[in-house]
Image: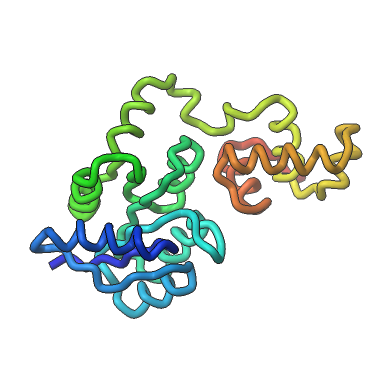
Length: 211
């Protein structure tokens, strides 16, 4: 019997997923959580085989929670169940340690297929995401390439540790404009903080080297 923790802030959604999962004789939902804090507690206590995680939670994004749960229980696999189907969310979720990503718009059977694939050690993407990736040139799979020229400038300065006021001064634009670009680029990149921006820039070798 495989144990599963469901994390979604909507009770009706959790109930629907639970009924679907428990129609399978070897799958069992051992805990339902509506927040990141609840999820951390449940995973630490239950040590489930798998966590089915929504990214939109009332106490913060599910993206940082992926890494946190992996640190709490490294053997627990994570499948994201989300309405967000943008490539930045998918790429970032997988980068942070998720083993699968299923959008909420696909057929229910894909959820069960995804859970089983991940529990067998595979990386699973729902059919709509696989199709979109197959149709997209490989370079554009990196969300950095989705940024406009100005967003990229703001991204690199924020990643390098500049405050929004400093960014505005260096680029000769208003501070309010910086915040607009910041919100847009963080959405495209699936980032939750400047630390996430720093990590993404550092991994790609985009930050200046320190002497």
